[in-house]
Length: 205
Image 1 (cartoon, rainbow, N blue to C red):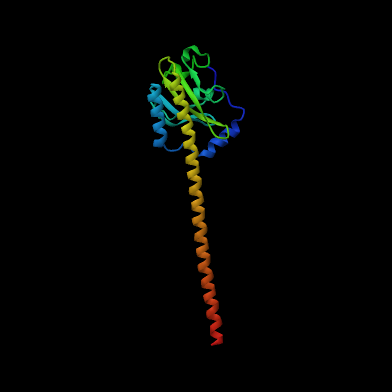
Image 2: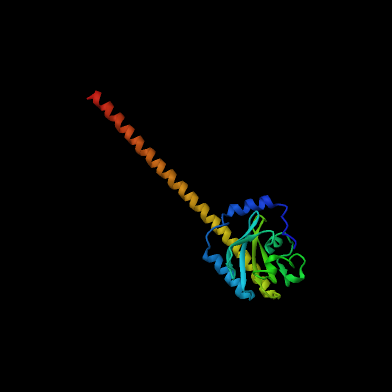
């Protein structure tokens, strides 16, 4: 087995992944539907949206597997984010020196076929993959490859939308806090003015 290599820009890539705030979060229906669709169109029993942390791979969405994470060293997706092809395809893992004795091949989930499309942020960092997996050797049709790319791009758009929504929520909270502080400050000023006016009216009277 050949362990998944580390990208040259790994530190920056991890910072970008952290910025999106999707790692180790709750499962969400929008992402679940994407892996269900990828699995159905590519006719594979397994599909995942995999995010690659420092030493783990974690599934933001999954169908066909029970586990939620695994070691990055043994991951296929770790290889997918460092290769140059648009999609990394392994038609038969037993014929690929990188994976022939990989524990994910020799044991559960008994991977034979893998296709992974890197999830690339607008700034160019590969956060993980949308992948489809089968337990028998096979190939994807051109239409299936195109679908995997389209769905993978939708995942990144969902990440972007999710991030913008969070940023909007933060801005809204800040505005509300500032408004509250201004109202409190105004109330204090009114009270001070009232006290001063009362103190001034007393001697004059």
